[in-house]
Amino acid sequence: EFNITRPKGYTVSYHANPEMEKHHFGQTHPMKPWRLTLTKSLVSAYGMPFAMDNYNTRAATYEELNSFHASDYLDYLASAPAEDMPRDIDNPDKEVKFNLGGSDCPLFHGLYDYCSMSAGGSLDAARKICNKQSDIAIAWGGGLHHAKRSEASGFCYINDIVVAVLQLLRCFPRVLYIDIDVHHGDGVEEAFFSTDRVMTVSFHKYAPEVFFPGTGGLDDNGPKSEHNPGAHHAINVPLNDGITDEQYEHLFQTIIGKINEVFRPSAIALQCGADSLAGDRLGRFNLQVQGHAACVEFCKKLNIPMIMFGGGGYTPRNVARAWAFETSIAIDAHKKIDPIIPQHTPWRERFIHDTLFPTLEQILGEPRANRNTQKRLQEIVQHVHEQLRFVTH
Ligand code: V1S
Ligand code: CA
Ligand code: ZN
Image (cartoon, rainbow, N blue to C red):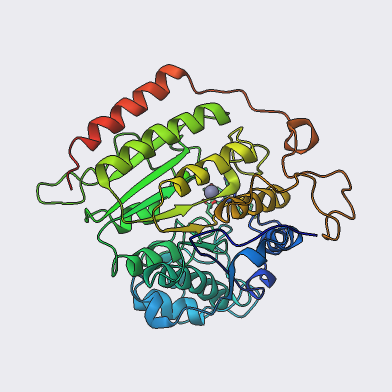
């Protein structure tokens, strides 16, 4: 039934753990780990697992998480009582200090297991890339780019990306981090502020004060202190509401193409947050699955070992569409898969005429007004080119 075969000449690995998907942030919280189940079921319905090495992800160890995170933070995360448990009267300030227990980063049952499994998948992916057992490693359960060394932030508790990139740095001289989540990849940017071995690039909606996390302006390129090798190695692409596929693809290809020439990365870490799609519950862009996926395809064509992480994405069926289609790009099957979603998937029973590429009217809702002028996008490209003049390798 499926004519999906292993790609010729390279290996793709898929890292997931069905246990992760059973965790709940709470009824009204936008982050729904079951979107990972939906993604996996769509990937399987298309027969894609036949074309990849499939690994059941383990939990990262305390020592592995400790490669980036502070011990007192990890200790508290491991022991923190769930929301409905009695509070620890000896530690009233710890939740505040670590930004835990608010509405963005609630303390839920199994939190530590959830975090360590997310990081375990990303770390396994990095190890497969390091020892050349895979050329593209997929970890949709990772991509939690806001977590800091000693602080949870924006639905992220453990920064699996930083942990994975630290692993990549053991085997590769330079790593390029690219972030297409609608939010600024602040945690990853900050973690590598003082090294020239990692260049971070985030495309995001930017409106300080009103849109989370409020950082990532065009001029924020890493601390410009005199002896900081990391200066000019943080690239930010601040965008307005309603950006289209055409504009985004052009911007992405121009900027990433140039960075590839100048920085010459030996590995790529690509955060594929799907909240940059049109119709996302938190996002503001007009990207279609095709436009989002074009970024993945562009990176793949650079022929550099790559990890693909998940991230945000709050309209679960669109998240599954994007990540399943991007998995098909990784295995080079995207030109032959049928856009009509196959029979036998749980969702096909309810949505008989569903396709991978819904038209705006079908599901994504009214497009947003596009607030991105060509003039502004040109200025952004210009500024990035100026930053890259400082980069020599
Ligand atoms: N935008 C947004 C948003 N929505 C929520 C939220 C809504 C309902 C809930 F029950 C709980 C939280 N929080 C936010 C943002 C955080 C966005 C994180 C994005 C994560 C990622 O996609 O980049 C990667 C996985 N938080 C805020 O805007 C902060 C507040 C300032 C306002 C909202 N309240 C709930 C908390 C404080
Ligand atoms: Ca981003
Ligand atoms: Zn996001």
